[in-house]
Image (cartoon, rainbow, N blue to C red; front, side, top):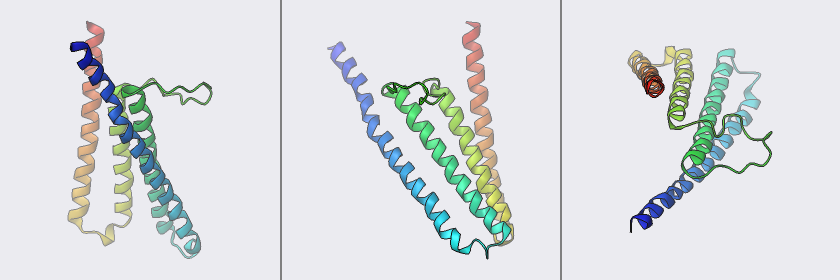
Amino acid sequence: MERIIEKAIYASRWLMFPVYVGLSFGFILLTLKFFQQIVFIIPDILAMSESGLVLVVLSLIDIALVGGLLVMVMFSGYENFISKMDIQDNEKRLGWMGTMDVNSIKNKVASSIVAISSVHLLRLFMEAEKILDDKIMLCVIIHLTFVLSAFGMAYIDKMSKKKHVLH
């Protein structure tokens, strides 16, 4: 009976597969949004102010950061929780694949969230004259919360690694 339960629990990891497939659809949607922004900006590019262009570029960077985060979570999550990817050609295999454990994924996700929040905050600062001070303050507080959370997770990870080395 125990063996059957263990096999069922182990096989249930495949329930995560649709989640990773769904994330790949999210990545496709992000890619479409990226190119939509480029296509819509082209006719107005010569009339656009420099700060307007910077805001558009920051928006594109934001999409790229979220896309990178999605790829990292999809690939490393799949390899950590479902199955190793069988990529025959080692030259095409991404250098970080197979090297990220759950803690390093958490730290990378936290770092990515801080980077995304930083870009969003920069966009907000560039339009500061149009935005209420309360909203700017709230966004700064949220960003600092992300930064402190990322530092906290990295510190905890570092301490747990030290603990494992000492034992």
